Image: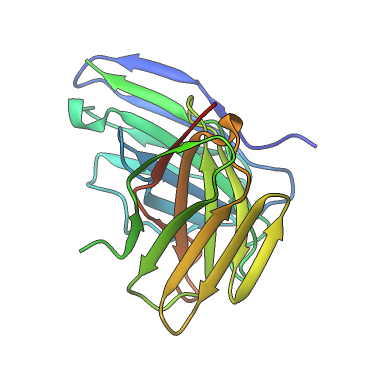
Amino acid sequence: GAGVSQTPSNKVTEKGKYVELRCDPISGHTALYWYRQSLGQGPEFLIYFQGTGAADDSGLPNDRFFAVRPEGSVSTLKIQRTERGDSAVYLCASSLTSSGGYEQYFGPGTRLTVT
Amino acid sequence: KNEVEQSPQNLTAQEGEFITINCSYSVGISALHWLQQHPGGGIVSLFMLSSGKKKHGRLIATINIQEKHSSLHITASHPRDSAVYICAVRRGSQGNLIFGKGTKLSVKP
């Protein structure tokens, strides 16, 4: 079956603009995770959803970042007033559920460049 | 100090060599993952461990819960094994993963 997909694959935006990054999880997966990976670093956690609700948003760096998953499937990560420091690869992953130690499946990422 | 530390950061090997990548963590965990990331960004899960040892082909992963340490071994390494290998832990009941910085492996023919 289809894996996790993310769109766009690349996004270049100017400082101060608003961007939306989309994640389509594997069908039937109730848990969805957003991570951010800067060059040469391991991914860092941003937020995860169990169903429609954000179970943990402690990794969001500030209030410019927001994510939604209104129907418990597709999720959108929204970044307002982008800054150059937001440039990174934004990774999405999904798993069957967030409890029970199920494997996470990763999407290809969206490379965001803020100029 | 990071909660997940990997060593070495970079590793160059000759084809055929036995490779070991180490991961130490400082928090209580419910599972440890080894992931592979090729240039271009795609991350693939290799193993998920909560105890003991797992083997898949030429890859072996071990974990010692008491010592909070895991190792990933690659036997008979091949240039196609060149990638970044990332250790990540799942802390208790939390769903998200905490990642190490990765080990960049380059296997020369």
